[in-house]
Amino acid sequence: MEERDDIIGLLRAVSGRMRATRVLHEAGFALCVVLFALAAFELVRMPLAGVLTDFYWHVLLAGLAIFLSHFYWVHLNRDVYPMSMVWLSGEMSEHEMRLRHPAELEQIKIRQAQEQETEQQESVQEKQTARKVEEDQ
Image 1 (cartoon, rainbow, N blue to C red):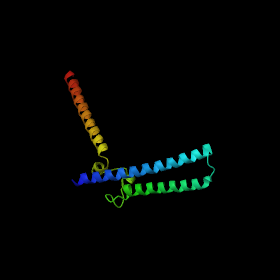
Image 2 (image 1 turned 45 degrees about the vertical axis):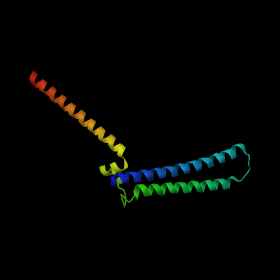
Image 3 (image 1 turned 30 degrees about the vertical axis):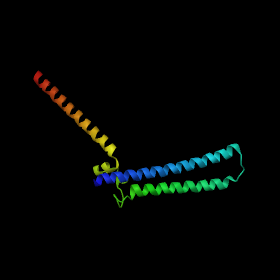
Image 4 (image 1 turned 180 degrees about the vertical axis):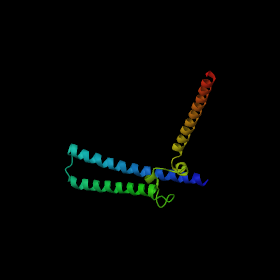
């Protein structure tokens, strides 16, 4: 039951970050549309320096928010405190895979089972050919 709660909490956190990222992208896109419309049609003459400065700070704050969110949830997560070693070693335990990447773990297990099955079939075929060679001699 605890594992299920962990997965649900992880899904909620990911969906919340995805919503925040979407809002930041939409706001940045809206600012870009306004800037291009002003530059293309020259309907309103206004100092673009102020608009660009506001846009610059918006992008800077959005990037900082994304960086801090990523750093906390990936590297300083309470489940792997003080630090996740995955980014150093490139290896992850099966428990971590089950919590964070269940679909990928399932695919890996299916692929491993298929590889074992083909290896068994190949070894059976090799034994059969070896027996035939021995019988022929």
